[in-house]
Image (cartoon, rainbow, N blue to C red; front, top):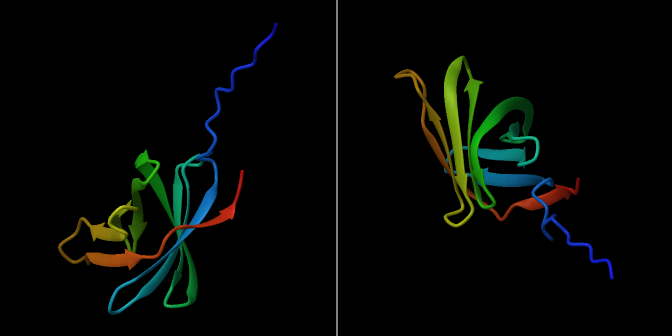
Length: 110
């Protein structure tokens, strides 16, 4: 008798998700994929933008990524359990922004 054992998990991390986040000043939309190890800022206050970030650490419910915003090196971290996203810039002239996010929305299954 031949048995086939699946090595793929039931819930795949290869999907593309959307995060909607806001604070007192801004509303942002982010798209991310664990498989591609990429996070993209797609909207700021309903104005389209495209700023790429590369994931450096990830778990099924969080990520940390690096990119450049307004010429400043920027670190973006998100945690599903706290529903918080932090955008921290490494320059004294940069700004640190903290957001509360809705539950991630599945955009596309890969």
